[in-house]
Amino acid sequence: MRLLLIEDTARLRDLLAESVHDAGWRIDSFGTLADGDAAIATTAYDLLLIDLGLPDGDGLDFIRALRRNGLRTPILALTARAAIDERIAGLDAGADDYLVKPFNHREFLARCRALLRRAAETAAPHLTAGRLAFDPATGLLACADQDVPLTRRERAIMEILMREVGRAVQKRRIEHALSEFGDDISTNAVELVISRLRRKLGSYPSGAALETIRGLGYLLRELKA
Image 1 (cartoon, helix red, strand yellow):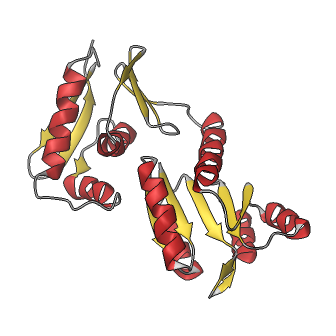
Image 2 (cartoon, helix red, strand yellow; image 1 turned 135 degrees about the vertical axis):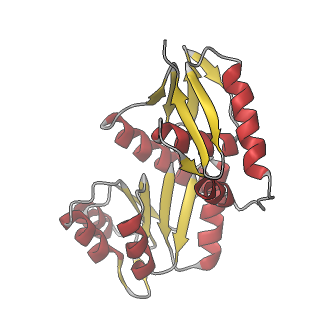
């Protein structure tokens, strides 16, 4: 899962990013609508988190414009505007949910999970490769109905590989995914996570192989029966 946050308060932006990372998701955070709009134009997100009071424009107008342009990504509006009419205006503008500041971070994550589940129900429910099935909404990987335990770094890499089955994924793309957790990335961090994933997949009848493409990156390939 990859989320976008547009929030101009740096402290709140950092706290929400930390909560999202702890949930095992990736997040891109920006302080202005202009920067957020540029990110949306180049990146596919699973959920947008948009503050309504921003220094370079009104979040409601921004949401309306996104919907007019055909964007169907779920949107959670974050705002200090608590009046019922303002909540209704946010939902009518195209937001899928509305959270009033200050809010509890557990409730914030619960609302994110609900929106992601709702979106997953209208899309392909799982990513598959061989006998592997990955649920992007929960980050759970299963093989032949057996749960495969993954760390948050392994989940991030597995989602990328499952979305690109049969195609090579560049190493720097995976390094970027790991860096979004706010951790320092050592020179061999990717190799270590890939090695652990390869061992785990080898412990199950996965019907898939995780291969290293020398000089490029990695590839998850379905094995022929």
